[in-house]
Length: 160
Image (tube, rainbow, N blue to C red; front, side, top):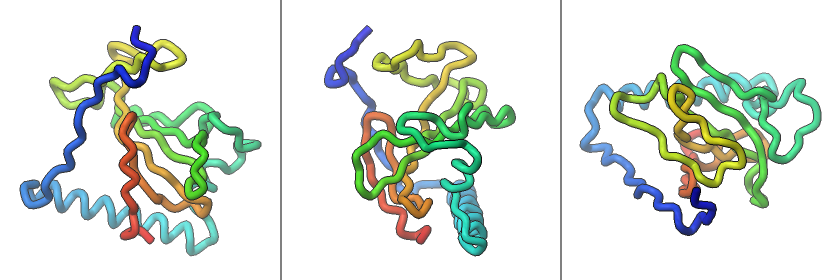
């Protein structure tokens, strides 16, 4: 097992060219973005935010702990997420990690192994792939995106 992060070969991330995406994919992304924006505004109208709702009734907010305590798993889509904090970033309160489990991965795809994991990395039907991390500010708003090993820090001004 390789335990040196500088020796891990990560794939190059290349964003898609929007002009080359099929109309159906663009329409789906627009609808999803609209749904996210509408949900965030609905929470704000009643003085709430996404991070506050995830942390509600979870006790003290402790660095590196997962919130909700046992993560969130969706059996239908095979997706998973949790929220936590561990960075010394003045702009970031914490971040969501989102994953796809083996059952939801497109045919022919497989997740990369993570040799620096502190516990055995799931394999086979339990395998997981990190999709994207979503950085959140102290007001519960998204401020950036990142991939494991790649800090993208893309501002999400359109959501504000």
